Amino acid sequence: MLLIVCVASIVVAQMFILRSSLVTAAASREGAHLPRSRRPAEIAWALLPAIALGFVLWITWQEARAVTSPPSEPHEHQEHEAHAS
Image 1 (cartoon, helix red, strand yellow):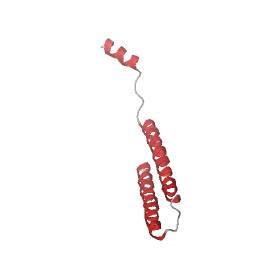
Image 2 (tube, rainbow, N blue to C red):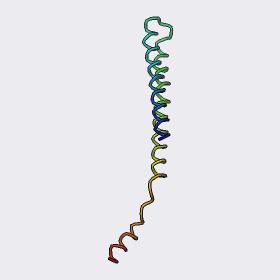
Image 3 (spheres, rainbow, N blue to C red):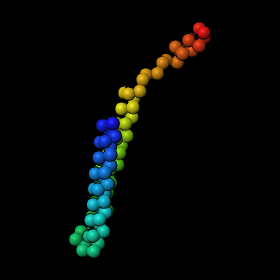
Image 4 (tube, rainbow, N blue to C red):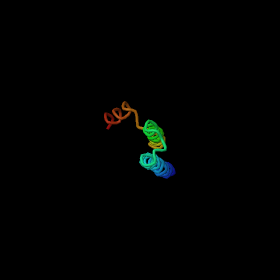
């Protein structure tokens, strides 16, 4: 449950970061405060952490599932039980 709350918090925060970058890029078109070449870089620097966080959260989810799932029986042990009955 804690992982889900953390993921939700990260997703919301990252959405606000991306929104801020996009609004800043749109507003800078009107005022021309930033050179044109910097806007794509600003958006890229907002997207790269989002992608990296998504990857880290995916790995964390996989590891959490591996720890919480019960270990499976070896295949040979199952066959032996099937022949014994």
